[in-house]
Amino acid sequence: CSDGWDRTAQTCSLAQLYLDPYYRTISGFAKLVEKEWLAFGHKFSDRNGFLRGESKEVSPIFLQFLECVRAMADAYPTVFEFNELFLVHLHDAMLSCDRGTFLANCERERMEHSVFLKTESVWPHFFTRAEYRNLLFDATQTPKLLWVRKPRPLTVWTTMYCRWDADIPRQRPDDIFASLAAEIDYEERRLKLLQLKIEERRAASTPSKAASQLDPLTSSDPLSALVDPLSALASPLSANPPSVLADPLMTPYSPAPSQKVELGAPPPFTLPLTVDACSICDRAFEFLDAKTSCHKCGKIVCRECSRVADIPSLAQRGVPVCTPCRRS
Image 1 (cartoon, rainbow, N blue to C red):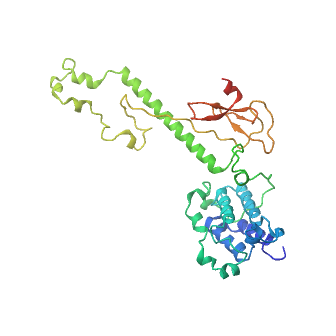
Image 2: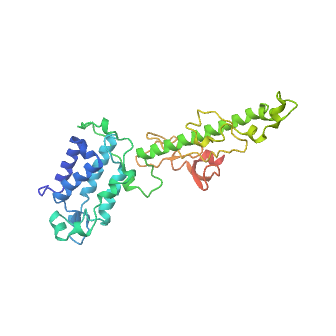
Image 3: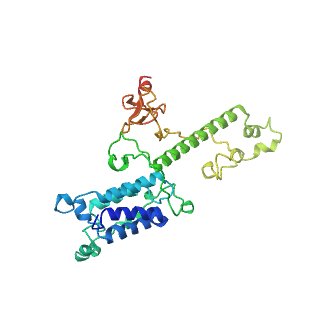
């Protein structure tokens, strides 16, 4: 790289990501791109074919750099403030040309065409969006220097290259966190429903104290029958319904028999990170084989052992299930 705007930009940028934790943040990564790629004259227009020119000049240099950053994020999942969705949308913003940040080939051309005055920058969009932040990032535990570990096997960047293929599984940490949060929410609603059933059975098997107070023959105090019956039936929690309690699971209460809790459908299964073979036919998975999670039993199966079936209790439309569950 004799000119210093292709491989030099890639190498210097990756080295600074290893050496300085500031460039692993969203604002630091933006300054790194501005400094090493835009200010040093990487030819974004020629390398991406924005305008008619020589075809030999077209090359995905910046995409290669983003994929190297994604590989670093996979090796060190807690040291980058941004996630891979940030990298994918940054690449899309570069190709869309709807912002002036990546237009032209150098700073001189951008100043000649007044790009900074006629267009907007792409960075405010990424600074204000929460979905681009890595949930595993911890600024207090981020090391200053990243040691180069032993070589890791390269994997296909499915979020970039297979984003429109529904059969290719996604293994982003954000998706795993979202699935775990959905499972926890489902189990909490299930626990609350079981507690309601227990309270209803206790109320059905225990004589009502309010009914004995309203009956003058069984009441120990004859004047208690003259008390307003609505005040006798009022629950001590009527002024503070269970929905606003600090912790409904730890605070006991007796709900009305007509109160219902919708359990809803269970959350979708998350494909495990390491699955070697199909649970039905025991065929070993190849590198690009699609893995499907049965929405009924949760087994991980191959495409040949997966079918689509209608399960009204889980979804309104067909969902993937394994062949034994489809027969049953």
